[in-house]
Image (cartoon, rainbow, N blue to C red; front, side, top):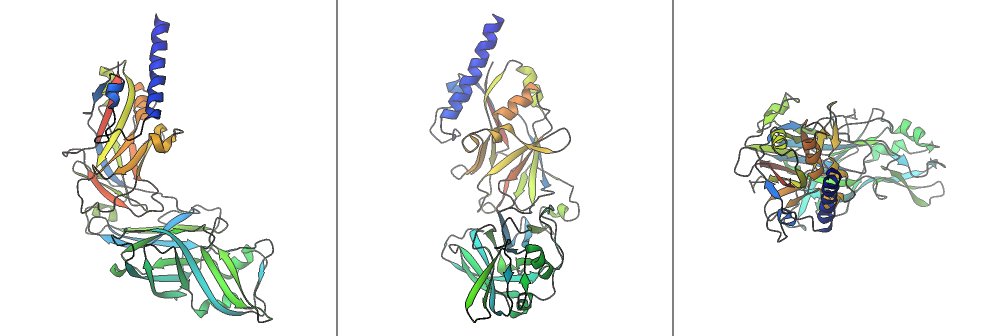
Length: 425
């Protein structure tokens, strides 16, 4: 009988996984799907208290990713953020090198392929004027070195470019024609390798001028074939030609994100980076090495003790956005990590399922202004004691390459962070 009981429970668990994986992942309110509690004839618990605080997103690695953000943005809640790109320029023909011997330089253009912008305007054809700046980096960068959002490099006093660029949201590329002071880096030079070229030009700093006129962030695809620096010149025979330098994975590059929280609800982080802000009423999520949310369910162990034979068929975490004004451009999705015994973070198992996009979800639901994250495996492991309950961390998804932010309801509001567990026992 004991064997049959174990077999029955195992079959029930397998069937629960099969059923969850075969239905539309949108099972929350208003979606018109059958409640999982009725599918399993299960019970529902959604009263487990959460505790949460806002903390800084510290140690955000930004080096050698394919996308990043360039720009400046300010609002009254999160203050300002400056987003800059530091990059080497790599030869597109590293095996054969390039020669500019007896060449006459006509122009040098930096091109950035854009995949989006923040904030997204209501009129995507609206034109904005953005003041870009390009400087020479005077400090070495290394392809095998890790760089973080708080890192920076020294650069020249005079820019190679400092001018206005007309841009609309639907544009796919920005071209910055550098001034003639950079020509000396190429004239009558021969570069047999990347290392030789980097001795001449260590890299470039690309940013927007930091002022309220440039309240805009561009998403840049650094590895796109058209992103890079192009030298237009006439060779010794007078033939017009061009040569491309790349900002791709063969060139060391990283993004620097500088936040200023002075005079905002997050002012404490301006001087105390390791501090936290209590989350009873509001919690703050910001990309680009900004803020994240650390939370726990301290009484989940009590629930587990009261239900020692519970089989969790589904557990969902709901986060709500109450303020439409502040949250006019919320992140497209959120992600979750859990704390390990050594203090490090690991992706929760629900995010690592083979059906990540279908299973975990995490996407913004505009109809009820909320995020829903399926955390069934994580909660089951916590309840069973197979992993310690050390808390979890919530971030804006793709936080290295998007600029979205949002203020979510705290743990003691009318719409608190809610854990919904559907189970049988």
